[in-house]
Image (cartoon, rainbow over all chains, first blue to last red; front, top):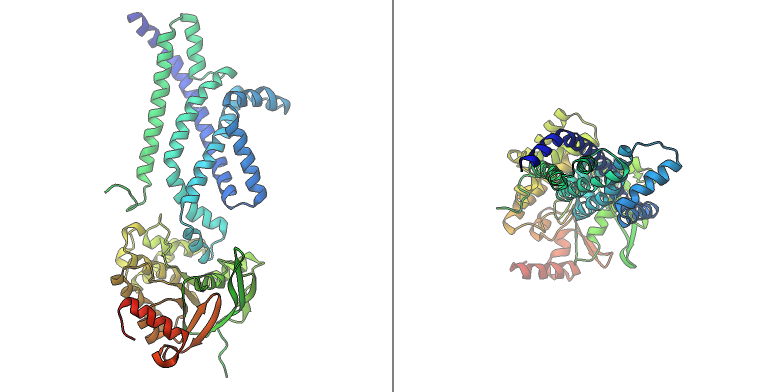
Length: 224
Length: 253
């Protein structure tokens, strides 16, 4: 028992460094996904047929192929074919970002489409261009509605980031595997890794629900 | 000499889903006119109002504001035209994420590029004009229907429109809230605002409308002054329609 605690204590600083890598990759991926997701959602709702088709194909592709396959496809396939020389870390961040972008686009699309049509009409009637209406009227409302779904997406991507291990990124999972294969303390170490993921999930979800409350529109509530 | 109309609607037609919603509708508004669109639902009143500021682009026909035909090819011109035409909706369409004040300031700032302080000042004046100055910091979800509609009128007025289009502004309101909104519209009309309004508030029409335009199945089938069209022995479709409305409301014409 004491033995196990010592192993964990000794490995912890090393694993925590891995947590920083995980956090960086997930933050980058979620950020990229946010930009891609909003852009594609707007394109899918307001764009012409060509844009809608392109977004549709993109979303189907990234939703239809396993993340592990995508990681190999891009890292060993496309990125090296294009001679991009991307590190494993950046490859993981990009692939996770593109994947979550596909999912996030559908979160945002649902939110945009749930807004009453009159919102856009009223904005247009005041002389706003479509771009301005979307930026000042539609997105501020749609993004608020998207926070619960986005929080879900965060927790999924955080855990998917463990797949980065296969490319040799030194995030939580890779470091845990490294230590475990040397000390043979599998149970203790993977449990520690699990707890680290759990804490990161909990912190992120907590922060997002705090944000949700903070930006809640006054009077707009289902609670009495 | 006939005055030059401030707004001309020329032979506007619109098909939606294979159905003719508007069949070559024409009408003019002179400065200070209050014209009222009435008629059965589905008759094209709302579509006509939305065709006038191109929220629904007409299939054919023209809109002319102060002698200038509105062109839809130049987006910028279309946006500028819309700024001059205030629109009031049946269900208010206040921006739900903004408080009353910002509902009024947003277009001033984003469209008219007014600075924040000036926009706020002007917005407060308009909110006070319609009697909701004390609600400036409340959000739409915290306002009654009548207050929401008054905020939406303030929002339109702040843009300094030349014409206002009102699409059944009191139809979504509880009966006891209709009066406060009609009072605001009455003040506007008496202040010289040019307005085209779809409404079934017969008392209001009788006392204020310059002309009643009766629409049915996408066409104007009757038009005239309220006292001509509404007298029970005039035998008009309008009088018949209004007496039916009054029967529903338990009133006697």
